[in-house]
Each structure stands twice: as C-alpha cells, then as structure tokens.
Image (cartoon, rainbow, N blue to C red; front, side, top):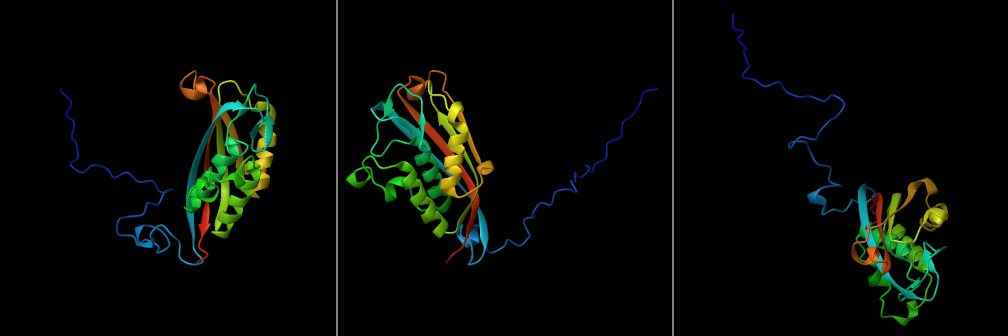
Length: 206
C-alpha cells in the first residue's frame, strides 16, 4: 500500500510569544518616526547613533598620540592639531549622534588657532556641546587601523582617557585594533586611521 500525504491548505502561523512586533496599524509615538522629523518632543528621549572616521599620514616629528596616549611608532603623524585620529573619530561620532555637523565645522583645519592643539581638548569641547544638545552616551566603540603600530600595551589607558573625556564609565568604552593586510594607505604603512561608533540617547532640550 502506498502511503498518501495530505497537506493542509492553511499554512501554520509562526508565533514568537517572547517578542512583540509593532503592526502597521499600531499607533506610532509622536516622539519617534517620520512624524517627528527624527527629533524628540520636549522631555522625550530617542535613541541615536553616530559614526566618525579620521586618518593622518606619517611624516611628523611629534609622538603619535591616540586619545592623548603616546604610542610606540617610528614616525609621527602630520596634522593641523596633534593628529590624534582616535580623539578626532570619537568627536565626529558624537557630532553625528547629535546632528551638529562635523569636527571641521567647529575647528576648521585652516584656522591657525588649532595649530598643534591638544585634540583631547577639542574632544572635551565637543562633549560639552553634545551634552548641551541633550546627548547621553551609552557606549563608544573605537577601531584603530594600522599596519605596524600596536595599541595593546596602551589599550586600557586609551579607554581610561576616553571615559574621562566623555564622562562615562570605562566599561562603556571599547577600543580595538586591526590592519588591512597590506592593502591601502594603512597597509602600506603610510599612516593611521580610526573609526568610532557612539550609541546613546538624545533628550529633547527644546
């Protein structure tokens, strides 16, 4: 006898009781979504994210600084300020999270006032601006991209410096490093780059 299989015309509905998804007919809170223009109502809080990137080429005489920490390198970096790629990337990520512009908006590279300035001072200035705009930082993730420079000996000090500048706990700061396996300008050991992501909440102060 040949077995016969009977298929139901009604497919079983998948359900996940632990998750609640918002349906298309569910009301959207006025503090989020397209109706708010991406901004919170006064007193409301919305999640926000910012991404920053910076790169400088080798050729300077001063020590290489990452978040104000001296890193062992054969050459210094060239830049208007002290060429601190970590401080610059984090500052840009903060400004991105608050939609205030970029680092050049407040500290133009052609302005001689910023020649050789301590980039951690610039970062602290950006932190003050972003806090005034209502930003509450929850987590910062930094990646240093370099071929020969090693950050492992100073990783914890970099985390400590960033946590102090951002006024957050050190456990909320992640610092990683990678290389490009010989590809691109960092792979040719022509410079150092850094990328940063900031996750936080933006409280409306308007």
